[in-house]
Length: 204
Length: 204
DNA sequence: GTCTATAGAAGGATAGAC
DNA sequence: GTCTATCCTTCTATAGAC
Image: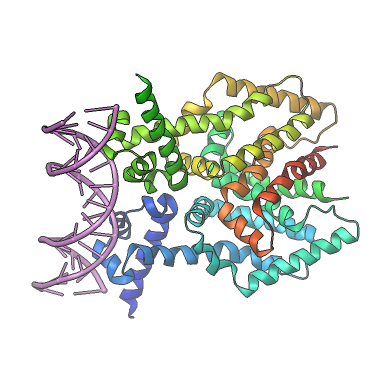
């Protein structure tokens, strides 16, 4: 496990992540990953044994990165829901701007192989964050601050509006270009527009 | 072009649509399509020449079906925006319940091959419907009925919340099952909840 | 129009030299 | 640890019989 080994293994991992995210499991070729890593095809097998194992290594790390951020500040007891919503959109859209292929990649691979999701969502942290959010929302409904849309639906609504335009980027970008709009600029605007939209819908 | 030919061609088309929607272009196999159609593999080539041609035939029809419905009543001059929003969610979610694989399929294939979208969105009808909606929204903003979120963002928000849970069904369904909820039941609820949510956000 | 058989290419994986 | 060469399987596509 000297320096060289780590370096090569990481080069492979990085190249694989890029290719898999862009082309998906089925559309990716070991040759292309090797090319992008600047090494030989058989080295992929030396380090990861098979395409499937390489894919799973990439998937689980990449997916964890995606959800880790969300969970972290959702669990923060010092922010109220309104602050969390503002914070979420700002942080999450910034993350998506840096990782534009991630949403479509995760959505797809999980749809095709539902087993992939289990390892992710069965963590303590995740269950904890979820329960905390549900309680917090219930209190705001109880006190009459917020309308009751049910936690699961509020969650879907909030996440949909930030993730969907990235997941369906091909379609959204095309429509925007026809209108003379720039995709990234518009996503920038959504960081402040979406909290307004959601909070207007929520407030009693 | 007798009856038998039409029948076989249609059987192939239907089988191809099912397989492509479920597995995507890269994940689909000509053998599997032939099996599902109950015919021989070489007949696929007899009718459609190549996998690519078969795919494009399926894609363009299936995609048109998806957008045709939307365009149709968006262009209706006898409904106000509020009615259109209610109508849209009821009709569109019903359509998605019958075609659960469609959103992820379209999103993906267009992301991978942006050329696919051009043929779709360059129709007269589409441009017409879009302009009509923009004018209608502008009038409602002008008269002080609705807040101004910009047409493109309002459009994205509305569509996101109905399409996303179907596109990301693998993830959403998993979370719902953990909560003891049934996916289809919850989508049923969204037909009435989403208009409420959006109109609450919109109304001045 | 439909089938069987097979060509031809490509991809994943392994053997073996260095 | 990294490379070249190659095996084996799978997939698209075509030839040719009926």
